[in-house]
Image (cartoon, rainbow, N blue to C red; front, top):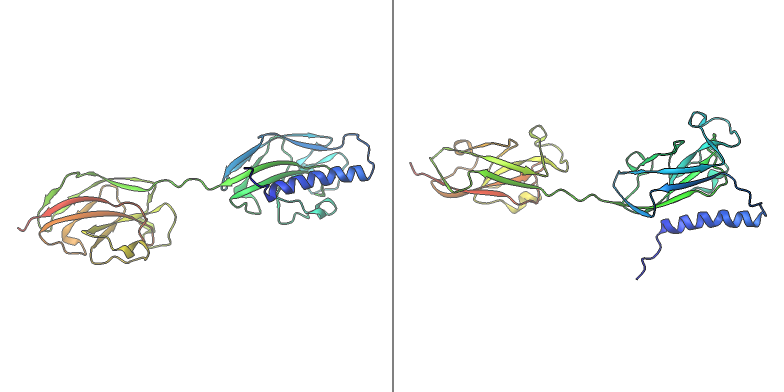
Length: 281
C-alpha cells in the first residue's frame, strides 16, 4: 500500500512543473541558464526537532557572492534562499518578499540548514526544503529550485529512574535515627535551586514518602499528603526520622523515593524503595 503524497511532495512537483510549462509556453531556447542542485543528502531524510541538515550543493550559471547580498543586481551573480514547503510567487518579482515559508539566505557551497535558527519554526512531520537562486537584491532568478524531502521527528525521551544503591536490604533504625542513602539517577538533572519554581522537562528533585504516595501528587503541586517526609536533590542524602514532617512510629515501614518536577508535581516514573524497621526504644 502506497503512502499518499504529502503536501510537501505536491508543492515540489508543482514548482518544478511550473518552470517546465513556462519555458515551453514562452518558446525559450534550451540553452542552459542558472541552476542549483542538491548533491547530498539524497532521498528522504529524517531530522530531529531543531536539528540540522548538512548540504552539498552544485551551482551553475551564477557566481555566489555573500558580500553583495542585499545590493544592486548584477547579472550572473547572487546567492540562494532556503524555503520550507512553499515559495511565494511574488518572490520572483519583488525584493525581500520572503513570506511565511522563507527560512534564510546563504552563499555557501556546503551550507547547513539549521531548523533551530529558522525564522519560521518547522513542526514535526513531512516537509520539503526548497533552495532557490536569488539575485543580489533578493529577487529570485527564474530557475527551478532544488528540493529535498525531509521528516522532522521528535527525539526519543530518555527513560527517567531513581535507584537505591545502598542500603539494599531491610534495615533497623533507632527511633528518631537516620538512614544514609546512596542513590543513582538517570534521565533527570537534579536542581535544588529550582525547587518550587516552574517545571522544566528533565529537571527536578525527589520526594521522600513513608508507606504511601498520594495519587494526587502526580497531578498537583504541593499535594504531599500524610505520608510526605521531605524533599531533596542530593545524590547521597540522609533521611532523618527526627525531622521528617510525617512522624514515624516504631514498627516496619517502607521509605519511598519519587522523582519530582521543579514545581513538586511527581514525574510518572517508578519510585525506589527500601524497607526499614524503627525500634521501639
